[in-house]
Image (cartoon, rainbow, N blue to C red; front, side):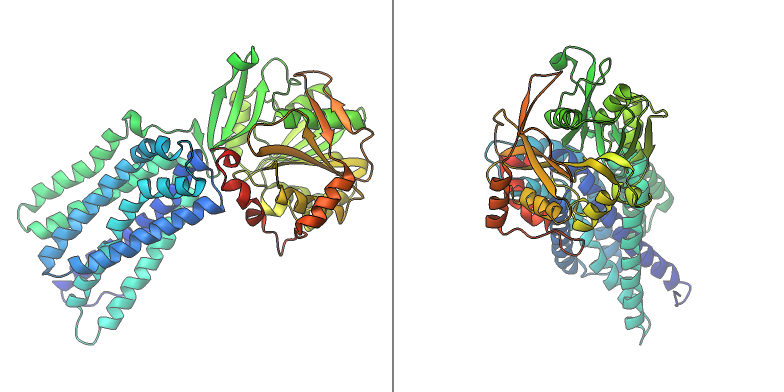
Length: 521
């Protein structure tokens, strides 16, 4: 990619190219970070990403139109306008996190539809940065075209479009694989603000033509020091205790509720396990309590083997490892930061009984030999409130059954609608294709709102009771829904069998996600 021209125009062409490249990269960095910053408020799902992409593209589009109107004028005017636009990008990046925190109570208020909340928060934090950076490229393009030699306008335009695409690719990769994981979402927004500030200072120098060294020094100092200073303000403090490429991880002290040292792990906006320090077997969350009780009711060998898909706080693996020190418990947790938090803050101790695999649960299980090896396989992994698609398909269930011992059980935790659990029915129908026994369990106590946590059990052997009362821990009872009723409702619902080729989990969950009481915001 060459930059032709005389000695006077070549630096200008390089400056135009650098501006397009960096502006495109930073615009995409902000878009990727938007998903992480919205996650503690509304989760990270297909719906939140759809809203973010729509808002950012809307900002880019309106910015391109506005930038075309601002592009008129000579080069000096263009540099001056670019300086103001890039300074605005720096300011709006700095204000994005405080803006989200100010907007969150408004959009989390009673009666606000979840779709309105997601769109509102995305607009509050990320529309203005996208609008302003969108206005940059038309101005730069006009300046570059004016500098082009006769007959080379097409070549110049092609170069700028290519650099814009390369910048977008670089920004996406750096945000997803480097920045968020290493400096966090708030730190990434501050770094973007600093980069925008440096670019603004450079264009201010190009527009001023006088006292360049003074202006440049002041601009560089402001660009670097202002975000660093502002970043210390409480309004820009991270909402996460730890942040990874996958989750915003928060540790909540629940000792006042439990009555002894205990902590709750929150990933993005959902609870993923509550551990009691001195009683690993005390299970605070009902669905984990049910999984423990139902497995005990079905009977476990003295040295059981279990495979867990998803770790979270490692509540149940920790409890079973303590109760069965001769057992073999493997946990596939894709996020090393979650495992580190469990060790650091949730009293998790690995040993001969408990082993952690840092991998996706399906990948980890399928990497083992397809022979009966486990008494229990439990899927406890969520994207927002929905199960990941690849853990809901018939191909996954076939891999599970091949690795279950005779009489073993596959358990899947499902958050669904109390009235019309369409995804639950689809998942149960899919399991029925490969397991002779499929049971749906739910707590007998009436749950508030629409959202209910079900436990699906698939096996070759039925559970010898239709009701279970807790043996220890909180006093609870659970019931198995009548098989005939479940099958009748599955047939009436018209839900599909879920496969790797077709698994519309998000569509089946939309009725719950779009309800305020179901979304869990």
